[in-house]
Amino acid sequence: MGKIYITRHGETEYNLLKRMQGSIDTQLSERGMEQAARLRDRLAGVSFDRVLASPLQRARVTAETILEKRSEKLEFFDELKEMDFGFMQGKDYEFLEREYPELYLQYCESPAEFQIPEGESFRGFRDRVEPIMREIEAVKETETMLIVCHGITKLILVNELKRIPLERLWDTDVAGNTALTLFEQTDKGMVLRYENDQSHLD
Image 1 (cartoon, rainbow, N blue to C red):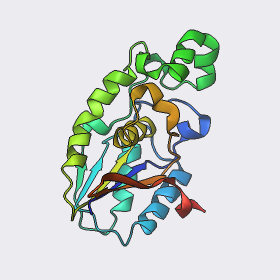
Image 2 (image 1 turned 90 degrees about the vertical axis):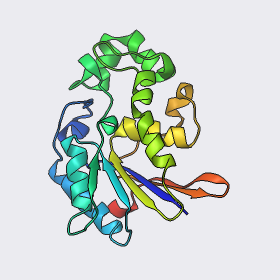
Image 3 (image 1 turned 180 degrees about the vertical axis):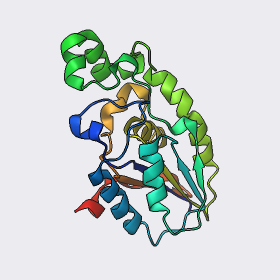
Image 4 (image 1 turned 120 degrees about the horizontal axis):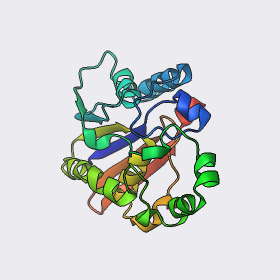
């Protein structure tokens, strides 16, 4: 059975401060590096035919850590970059709720219609990520793929694989740092084996 592992990057300082990072190229914190190392150890016994990653350094370094002393090739895809949050980047959710309550309400309750000024809409972002779905669909029964990306990127991919429409975006929780999700291709289609698992951090 084809296997698709999807994970989010390790912790950054912006994660600690609960700030939106989006397209800002932030670095892993010391704890984030440790999280990536623990995920590396967890996946040590898994061989990957392909490893796809966002080129933003928090995802790139997480992927490189996972592949330390391994022969797998790392492939970078701009489509896996985090959603561009426009003027909100670098600010926290309390700022959005306080200064732009109508926009915050749309973000929470009508994600399919959400468009952030100077940034991307959820609908446009889903379209940007769509080429990665084609890469996933091309995974053969004998192959295993790893995708290293970001919180909203992972959310969109997982929801697409679960066939959850954009209107119900928040039915799935945003993954914690280095949380691991596994799908398997079976004769009954794509099956979710586990989601947002952080047991390697216990």
